[in-house]
Length: 154
Image 1 (cartoon, helix red, strand yellow):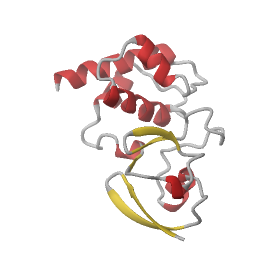
Image 2 (tube, helix red, strand yellow):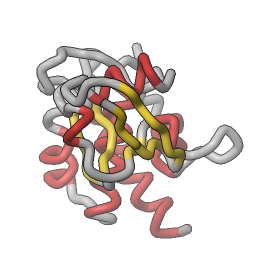
Image 3 (cartoon, helix red, strand yellow):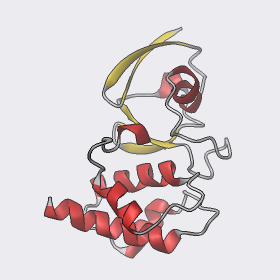
Image 4 (cartoon, one colour):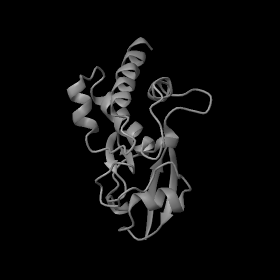
């Protein structure tokens, strides 16, 4: 079956069965490997992308259920101008191993789009499904607060 999918502002025709998870469409078909496979059961958040601005776990989202434009980590910022969240991530040295970071950033950008001035509780609630084995949660929270401040100033 053929599906038309918009990813990071570009339209793609994908000839795959509808039950193929979006994660594998992104990685294997479109070559966008920033979205990571973690657990495969939507429990860790490493595969988080945004579909129509809503954070979604791509490992459990079938291609035929994708309803709206998809944004992956490759669609955040540009090589010449990092997004506020990426700048804050760097400033706070959030990434250690880095494996979960694309999912963390995609979840955080969805939070900031919905809640531009989040409290610690807002952040903890929104981010609770994104696991970081390195335990950088305090830095993640601080980076989200700083990104919110940068976005207000812009």
